[in-house]
Image (cartoon, rainbow, N blue to C red):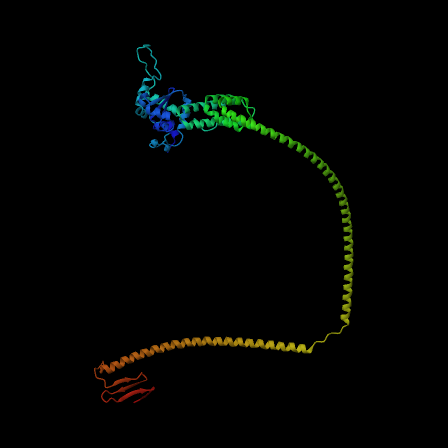
Length: 479
């Protein structure tokens, strides 16, 4: 969303014309009506050009440009009536837009001769011919509005010329009933007055002239100005020029400032007296300080002399200490030499005694005990070696036994499997002989029967006589 300032400079979406001393300004009714009751009345009830335009009076075009710049601050979103506009265009609408929006004004401009063509025949009965077309006229009018931007700011006035221009803006805002612009204009002018008054004495001639002009032409500035002046009253005092101006324009403020000034002067006189007394006390204290400084210097000199004497005594004492330490070192070295000689003598005497002393005899019992202990140790070593060999042998045997158990287990499993197979085959044989009763080859009947008892023995019996004819028992056979 664009800004209102862009709408003003491009005239995008404009729906009203303000004419100020022949200069056209293309504006938006909703923007003017929201901020000025006078302009609201003009845009709603104007009869000029059938309500398409309004002619302002007593406001110069440069001042009116600043007023419009102030009114067109902010964003388009602040005005719901302009929601259909983007405000992002960089150029003005085409000329045809102004033809459609302002048809009566368009007809009026056709009657205005912008640049008459020369009349070679000099026949006054012929109507004058215009060299500028209607489209060119619209382009010229809209092109002037492109310069209406950034012409008004909120900075404090910097010189008397700016104050004069600001007073024109204030007067225009007062005529158009734009209260926010009046407040801003007054703030900018009073800011310059405050800077001049803060500078202190002597007051400049420009300040006197501008203040006299502003306060007499715009009485609304009187009280705010003298409120600012009262802030600097202790510094400025009751200046004769401003006191007379205040008494004439605002007697109440003059009376109040006079009382304040009188009270301030009385308090200031008391302060001056107290200050004078303080200065006298300071002078007395400075005399005492000078006396104390002299005494301090004398004491410092005496202390310096004593310090020098003490330093000399200290140097002498240090020299004596060094000499005493040298003597002590000499005596210490001498004592060490004597002790060394004494030790040497003792050693020589001891050596002489040792040469004379007989050789000691060895204790036979001790030797025997040591020999017995050595034998016991050797015996223990042998026993340990033997135990290690036995342990090694036992481990080997244990491993062999484990391997044997593993082999026996495998053999047992094989025998068990063979026994199971034998039992199965034998059961099949018994079943075949006892149940079928004949040979599978010749188809002759068997004359025998097989009996078994838990397989410890096998007996053969005849079917007819039931006698055993062949048997095995306990691994022995008979016929």
